[in-house]
Image (cartoon, rainbow, N blue to C red; front, top):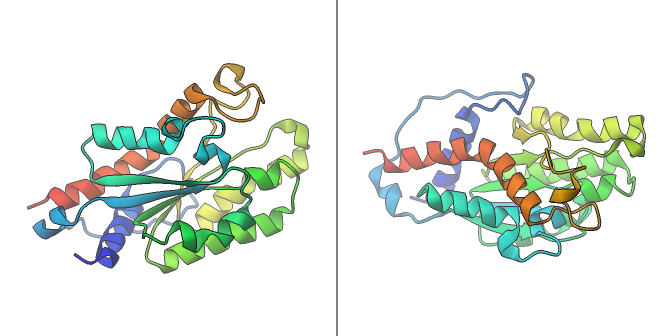
Length: 234
């Protein structure tokens, strides 16, 4: 089956998955639950591209300890036909991610997991520009017929209540605008926990990356299982 058809099917699977993370305002698409033709089973693995910054890249850790690789372990353990591709680059802002988007997707993608924004928020960059960059990334990916799973971020309160609140609103507003599933906070249970952070107090250590993989997997697994069930259907 052509890759475009697989992308369309994965988009359908993403829209049908039940997610408590996206919030009640996120648009939902309903469609009949149709099995895939048996020929799809021979099409090989589908590519899940993780586009992000140092949190995705696994700053100061071996690439195998970063959460995309840990998600791959869960994929393999579940015998699901997907390949997790780590396209994280430490230090990337949303503008950097937009500039290298075509490079990241050069070998194709059937699902993009988007994790950007922290390097805009931490130095206090313009949030309007950051949101615009992320919206453009999502638009370009969806224009390819590829669905997006958005990973949200939050800032600690020392950035001031106004900026912190506005930063936090960026992610659910994008999810609502583009009809995305959303993981509200990638570093849930990691941020502010020294035992899960590197000595810099910012980046997750290996145990912190494991926690982030668990957080992502809760939302990602139902999507991949639904797609796998379609591939296996007679």
